[in-house]
Length: 360
Image (cartoon, rainbow, N blue to C red; front, side):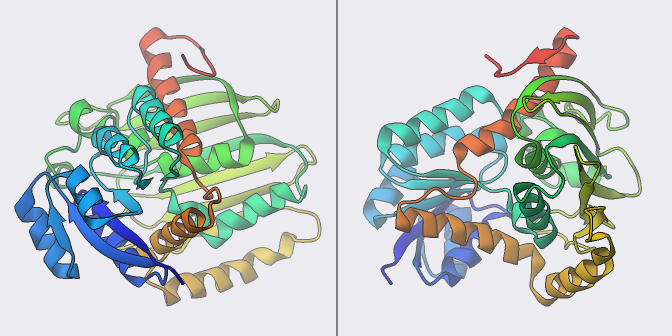
């Protein structure tokens, strides 16, 4: 199998997940890393026996990279993505795709202009319970999805926001709970329900006076398929509780997943404490499958390094897609949809009005 040369831009905590995946995949030759802090890049590169750079274009051209992952803070995704695409390199970007629609469109346009593939990391799509919901919807088991609900309640303390200088600010993080903690659940909601027609929402900072961004947001959504939904997400609930996505169909059946439970984890700092599982399933003839699925899915989840495994699964999907000239499961246009949703909530709060989609 011909190998694609792979590299990483941004040598922070989440970069290790990408490095381990690139190192393990049969069709990847992990080659180089880049960071604006060359000493950090060298320390990272030494762990994996690859080359270190502080110049993206030099890294891609000198090392002949085919695929690069971008693991920088959210507002710093666009510039390296555009540079990489202009060098003819395919780009996989950590969630969210960007912190603004303007940056999303710059990234997408660069991919189109250079005929390269650009994708976004939302590895929870690869959880077995999440895949099961999507397949049930595709198979028509609940009919048309008519009601979708996201609940993500958790807690981030001051130590979390102090752990990196970019956390908690508009300039450094690009937003709060919607941009950093809830994109996974928001992505699942739009994956299951389809395109948004309009949204109204409100964000607040309820109990984190030392940060600029929101710790809580609530929204009501109308979807283009005629369905409706809501989003309730918060970093202000202590102790941490859960993340859930529930979808109800026109035939009355409901399907749902608890994607996160027990405690909110931090990539590279803590582990996932509870396995994801389907917590709602009223599909006719399958009502009694919940316990079986939960046991099987939990056993599998606990049999792998869950912090790494699902990153590897999506990175594998992306590298395979590039090699075959196919579309990955989550390309840049898919990633933009989540950014459009949280942008809609920010604008609805600013204008106290319903925001129509597509957002201009």
